Amino acid sequence: MFADYYNYWVAIILMMLGFYIVISDANLIKKIIGLSIFQTSVFILFISMSKVEGGTAPILAEGITTYSNPLPHVLILTAIVVSVATTALGLAIIARIYREYGTVDENIIHDQDEEDEDNNEATG
Amino acid sequence: MDIQTILDISLLTLLAVTAVILLRLQNLLAAVLLSGIYSLLSAALFVSLDAVDVAFTEAAVGAGLTTVLLLGAIAITGREQSVTRHSKLLPIAVTTVTAAALIYGTLDMPKFGDPMAPIHTYVAPRYIEMSGEEIGIPNIVTSVLASYRSYDTLGEVTVVFTAAIGVMLLLGGLRKPKNKEKNE
Amino acid sequence: MNKKRSLILREACNLIVPAVLLYALYVQFHGDYGPGGGFQAGVIFAAAIILYALVYGRKKTQKIFPASLVRYLISIGLLLYAGVGVASLFMGGNYLDYNVLAHNPQHGQHLGIFLIELGVGITVAAVMIMIFYMLDEYAD
Image 1 (cartoon, rainbow over the protein chains, first blue to last red):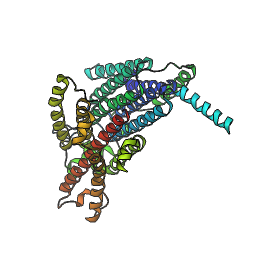
Image 2: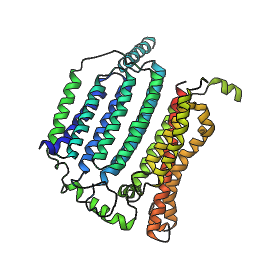
Image 3: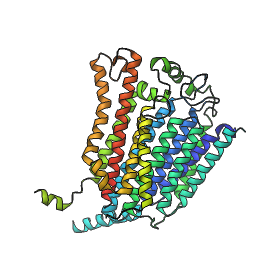
């Protein structure tokens, strides 16, 4: 059973490592790196589901009868391009945050926000 | 244990080791480069799992472009992480519970490589059999992507287009005052 | 900042960039016969231009690929893709139905796939170059 499910379990462990980086690290850029690890491990899970034992890459050739399933490949191709689009947008937001707050540490940004709120309430 | 399984297991172990090291790194430049290595290792894993188109895209996009974008972001924000910390107990607990739930969920899945799994018996055989006659190009992934499922690809190009517009709106608004005085 | 990069970097860039551009064209048009296609080709093309910009500076690169041209290319790729669909409507089929584009359904499929992969490649390359320009300009 270990060899049957090894791919899936390691994909889930990688997913959880990426998830841990996202929720526990205070640096915003490290969070984006953790998100990219999470996304890549989801791709590994899907591509593991598409493999057929004894099959080859889904390119038609003479003399080959079993092919791996091409549908998850198409889905993951789209997902990879969407992931780079969201990473680029997230990094643009982080660049703006850095210019505004002077730091990319989420705790310091949160404290600055609370200070600004207190100052606004005090001055009315 | 044939060579395929050994390759699979060693690549997956290397991936897990890279992710664990990434957790503990404080230097952002090293973290960005390690994420590039992570993408390259997963591209090798995809080749071993017969997904050549996906491996190509992951290597070009993940190991190439995402690394360049992250390096551009680090050029703006600086290389070292700051040292604010809080207790890691809650994240570890949440992660462990989620991992246990997901692994319990995978026990229901079909075995790795099973040709009789439900995913291989509905639409995919029709595409594999008819793609040669209806479309006539050898690469089945391109024929599914560009012809059978072309609406999804249209949506994907629109997403990339929207990301470009978003980045242009966020980062492009800076006009240096000198230019404005020259124009007026 | 006009300091020149070292001779090794410049010569290596001069050797690598043409080869990578040629490889991007190969991947674009051989996506039917092997792995490849529009996305991969667009990303590889953008990677070559980004390499040139990293070695020779953004201003020199913007003489060849000015930001206004890249902005047009982003829209032209997507318009090409959607335009193929509208052309199918005019020829009597459904939206994005390639069978009606030529005299023979298989030729129609080949033509449709060629055009949309070209559109995808142009848009993806232009988007990646534009995002790099934006990040580079913001870092100054």
